[in-house]
Length: 115
Image (cartoon, rainbow, N blue to C red; front, side, top):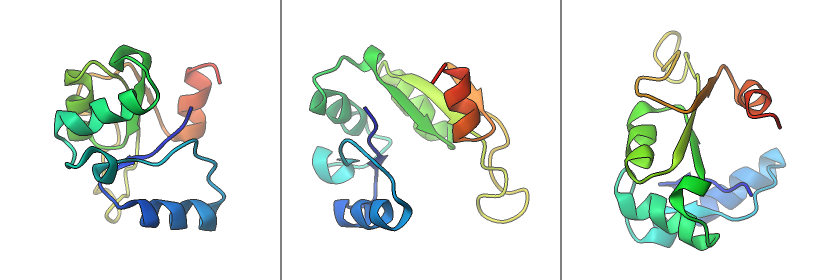
């Protein structure tokens, strides 16, 4: 299952999906949890939405603080590098916290996960 866990609202995530042909199973995050990341309730509500335990889920992100908060809730973590996120050389080139798996992009991460 694949779902964004975003601080953005649901209508924004739906618009993003439609314009980019993203095929999400659900849209989760702040609006569903009634709080904002990196608060634990957001990550745990996402797991609960699929009737899964945190250790059965993986948070994939490009931000160490997001991944650290998810890991503290028991989720597995995957880091995707976004070295130019806010302009050349301004993003994370690698994980800033301990993660279960890291990739240079989504395709690389999927390959490392055997998908």
